[in-house]
Every structure is written in structure tokens, then in C-alpha cells.
Length: 336
Image 1: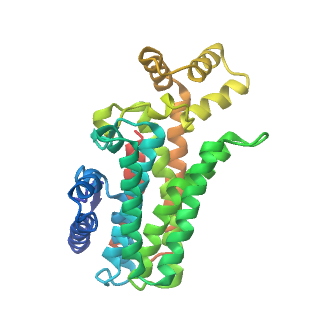
Image 2 (image 1 turned 180 degrees about the vertical axis):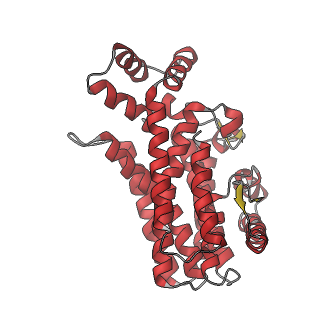
């Protein structure tokens, strides 16, 4: 068994390993080329996160989905570049909204320069993604536009919060389906579609992408609480400090609202207070790390990953299907 790609996926098939390695290398070259500008400062800012590395989860999914058709078809690598550029652009914008200091183990663009540079660099990446997308045909443009609408809608729903009477956990799952699941679904769809796979296969891999995208984000939620910055590449508890309730916090609040213990209520009160103070922030993190709500969030992650795996059942047995199943295990492993 060997390891393929920055995400650390293990596969057993040498031909698949070779194809995925070659595809990811071509995507990396495409990302560098797409982020060049005639203005050196723009190049520096646009390549800031590209050169910092990353899991390249979305391009990896494109490469695996393409195995169900012709993985060397001309649209496969450009579509992976489009998806990753779009993802990178959202990171620049997210870091401004979250006032994050660290991203992928390096200073965030807004911390290194300022918010205006970060926002405009994100816009530049969106523009470059659109330029590449235009060569992939009107159907690809429509798919990307619909996903981007869902992504922005998810961000707005997160900002607005649940309406009176809404279940906060159901609302949150809708948010991450838009913010994260939509683009990862496009990765699965583009990989299958650009490779010429059957429409039924395209549909299955789109559904798989949506579900594993949700699991991926839930794993990130757990990692943000449970890890240190060395493991995650960003400052732990960033969402806590900004008052953004991710799944572990929502699970805690649900327990507190349903006859919770004094300890549950005290931790909720701490989370609802001002966490800009480092000592209070550290206390809140420690409380969540020791609370059963974190384990509940881990179980939610496992459930979503299992749903993604089950979607694959109708696909023919092959090395790529096995790798996609292992990918579910890799996502869960990140959440501990």
C-alpha cells in the first residue's frame, strides 16, 4: 500500500498511483501558471497560499473521479485547477471575515498585507478560474456558477444565523453543504464529466462529493477544537474567538438546552462571553476538548463519511472505487 498526494490517500494499485501523481503534478503546475501576473506584487500575493501547500483534496477527487472515464482527457486537469483556484479564493475572503492570522502554517494574506489586498487577491483568483472555465464549455460554466451561488448562500446563512424556531444543527448542516459540500461535489462531477464517464456515474460521484464534503468540514470543526496549530496549519479555536458556532459547540448547546448539567451551562456561558481574552479563550478550548460534545461531533463525521461510502455502491469494483472508499477513512482519521 502506498501513499498518494498531499492528502495522504493510500492506494494499492500502481497504475492508479501513477495517474494520480501525474495529475496532481500537472494541477500544481497549472496553479502556478494561473496565478502569474504582469504585476509582480499580484503574483506574490496570488501565489502566497498556493506555495504554502495544502491538502489538494478537491484536485485529488477530480483525479479519482476521472478514473471512471478517460483520466487523460484534456479537460480533467484544467477543471481541477478551476476548483482549487475557487477554493483558494474563498480562503482569502474567509480569512478577512474571520480575522485569521495563520493559514496553512504561514501568515494569512490579510495578516501579511491587509484586508484590501486579501479581498482583491481572492477576486483575482476567481477571475483566473473563470478564464480557464470558459474553455471547458457552457455546461461547465453553468455548473460552477450554480455551485458558487450555493457557496455564497451558505456563507450568508452562516452570517445571518438560524431563524426563530429553526434547529441550529440542521441550519448548520445546510450552511456547510453550501460552503463546503457544493464545491467538493463539483470536483467529483467535473472529474467524471470531463473524463467522459456515463451520466449515472457523474451523478453518483457528484452525490459522493457532496457527502464527503460535509464530512470533510465536520472533521475540520473537530480538528479546530482538538488540534494544535502545528497539526491544522491554522490557529486553533479561530471560530470560537469569532463567535462562530461549529458542530461541537452546537452539540454542547443542544445538551445544555435539554436538561444539561451545571458544567454544560457554565461552559455555554463561557462560550457566549468575550473570548478575545487569551485566558478565557484557552479555558473555553480546554472545556470543549474534555466535553462529550466533541465526541458527538466525531460520530457525526463518521456518519457522513459512511453515507459518502454507501453512495459508491452502484459503481463497478475497481481501484478508483476502493481509493474513494479509503478517502472516507482518511477524512474520519483527521477528526481522530
